[in-house]
Length: 140
Image (cartoon, rainbow, N blue to C red; front, side, top):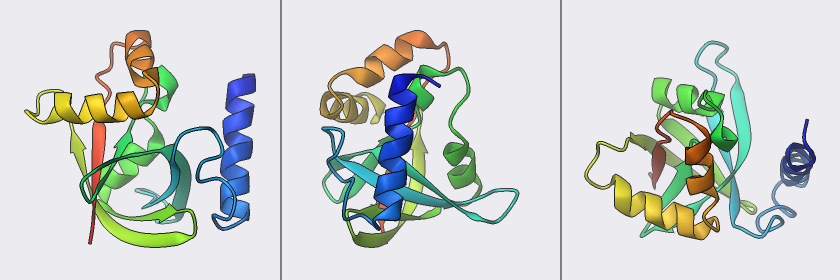
């Protein structure tokens, strides 16, 4: 595992382990905990993810660091779009919608998340031929 991967894993462990007291802004960008239901196991899965805001909605990017495979959490929320977000210590229920590049709103949403994450998502997109979707989570 790369140094970056190790840092991200440690960040996620601290965020989860402190129930949000540490981790929201630890890596220089706003980060939340996304809880999905495992599509096969039914177990709750938690991932620390960079997010941006679009009005009341939370925007996530299924980049998986530019890997050719999407992250497992994307498959989970496609199977069950009811999710939980934890921002610092606050928890909110939400409904996730996957926005693909063919969607008319994709370019606008991509710009928001990419600008928020210091242009990292554009670099990830260059690493893969897979179209990286944006996920919109609307609080319920």
